[in-house]
Image (cartoon, rainbow, N blue to C red; front, side, top):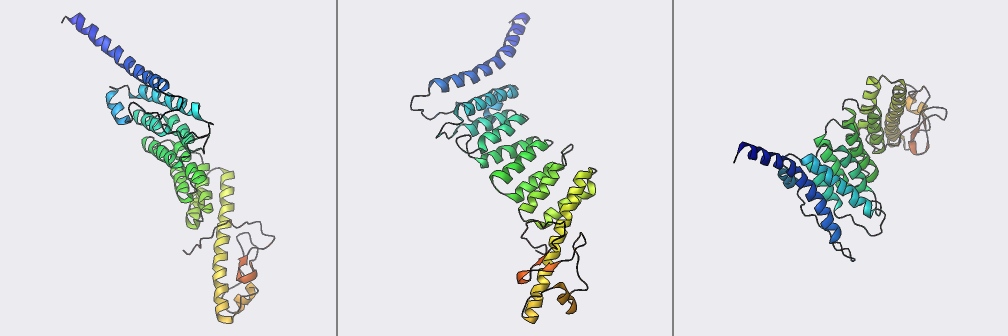
Amino acid sequence: MSSRSHSRALWFALVAIPALFVAIGFLQMRIEAETRTVGRQKEELLLRSGTMLKRLSLGYDSLLGDIYWTRAVQYYGARVGNPGEKFDLLWPLLDITTTLDPKLIVAYRFGAIFLSEPMPTGADRSDLAVELVKKGVAANPNSWELSSDLGFLYYWHLKDYEKASAAYLQGSKIPNAPSWMKMMAAQVAEKGNAFSNSLAIWSELYETTENEKVKKNAFQHLQSLHALQDTFELDKLAEQYRQQFGRYPASMKELYERGLLQGVPLDPAGFPYSFGAAGKAHLDANSPITLPKISESPAQ
């Protein structure tokens, strides 16, 4: 073969290969569309392995990833809102897309929405949404947005506050992450009754932030948590008093007179604590502090 013929063949291969993969993508969509019967027989992908497609793409994996992302959007859009839809192919399409192009952030973020939304607006598969976003976090460790999405999925859809807090906290450590990420981590920890985690996060945020509003917010939460810690300790003393004298104390003065306190304790805002029914300590009515709803004892 002459040099010119060889060059021509090489040029043809370079042009034809990407065109071939584009054609394969559109051909697969056409086949699926045309083989869909009135009874809507179960659809199947011609190739379900993103890893295999990546090997066959000859370096055009990002291009093929874009094609599969388009297919995923079209697949979702054609079915959203239809009663009885199960979105069986949504996860395979998103998995293939992100395997072909692990840096396609939009596929992780919107794909997670498609997967996690309840039927008929989504697949109602928050577990797969979490798997997708965790895959994105691993492939894009500098994307605080994905960590935020992961925290939201754990918080809103799965009610796993411990994992939600951890996801927000991890995302807050990424360069250029907004300060609210760490605030979310602390607030979610409070909601999940994780006293020590919440206290540690708010303390770090108070010590490190330069934003005065954030600092003030952190300070208020720290006051609330320290007041809560005080009430737990006072409740223990009240129980100790009951075991010794057969009843709960009516006031802090009784604990002082019995040597269980060295003085009348004040909350972080300077207001005295008092006892209510069943020996439970509470804040003064005039105190500006609000106790967080955490049932976990700081001593645990």
